[in-house]
Length: 286
Length: 270
Image (cartoon, rainbow over all chains, first blue to last red; front, side, top):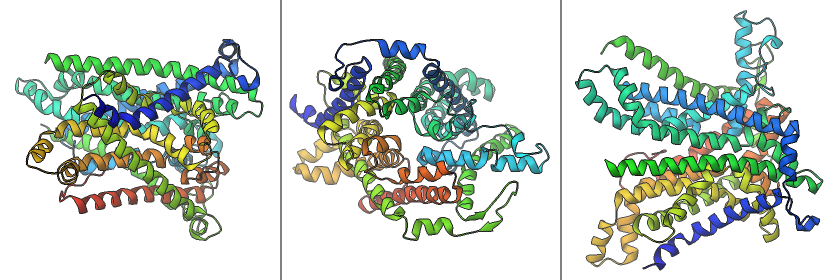
């Protein structure tokens, strides 16, 4: 009976092959192999040039900065909201449905939210003006199209906190009712129980959520494209500019930028895989 | 337990919910704005300009909305079918290379789509799939599948195979087993994975832009220029229709499913 599973897997295998070929295609071009342009000798030139060009190097830095700050922010806030939901017995029901709304809102619409609220002419600046905190439009700090990337970070946090909640809350609720209440019966306080028992046991799913949102925002194009500064650009935006450059000889730069993205995300994938196996071992032992 | 702690956590939870709902309300308001200049806290004039742009007929907004919804529903249907097949193979069979396939199915979540998109684009140009609807459907599907597979694997593992075997022993034909036993049991998973795949496809901007090459127009593609030009009223009107249409499709998904199964519980993102 070896045939049947492979028959069932056929479509997913075909699509996975396409996915892998797409990645390989890009990697091959990143080593400067584009036979149609007469480039046939593999070279590391494009990678080494990226590391010597400040504008491309700062694109990598910008992406890591935005991604790290927004992912940590989203996980911390998400876990905090989970804790409040679990401890006040709201881990199910209407409140949770409302919290999940941002999962269904596209990034382009989230960009609009940020513009309407946090731009220098946005609602928040107007409220500050009426409260006499700022005297003019310019006194409101630039959060959009700025080097600090705060507009993008806020947008990611809004979009990703619900994702963290979605990922963590039911597991946390289960652990809290089974093991957490046992600890409380033995005399531990609510927060003490939460920090010593529930939180450590939730860590695998929290790490899981972190890795996924980190990998996503590292490679996403929409928000840095719509809300980001022109210098430095985020990595995916820079890669697309190089890709669509009229001079096809720019294409290997795009692919090399993608190659760097790929290496970072492959490390994340590896960590994710280790995490999965670690969980399996744990489950098997218990 | 003291009450003050409860009040505090309720206040925090509700302010969080408000911070989720408030931007939606602001967009709804902005889509009817005529003039709302700095530093006014409320709109100065109301106008139907945004609605005219959407429904007036000189833009192709509604047509694009329709074809965009259709495209994403197609992706969702394929994702559900392939997700179910993959889940059954992974749950019920042992075969060489299983762990590699398992790992491969989650990769598109972690490897950014931009990394595979450009290489795939080059490939699709050669295959004649670039700038075409099938090409866009395929790349959307690659991004959406991991979620469908994950959801379907969980529910397939939970349901198991016993009831199907029992039906087979009692003499049911394979088609009867599928419609009477398997599908009703998997319904919650089918709906959530369809919803998830729909969201991913419907909100895809970059992949549609690159692989569709401007030939395949989806709703998220046509609203971005308004965002860039700073026309807040029209961008808001588009966004509002965008969000409402997503929710509407989910409601229809759910109603359709309720007709087929007698389950009363709602599945929205179940």
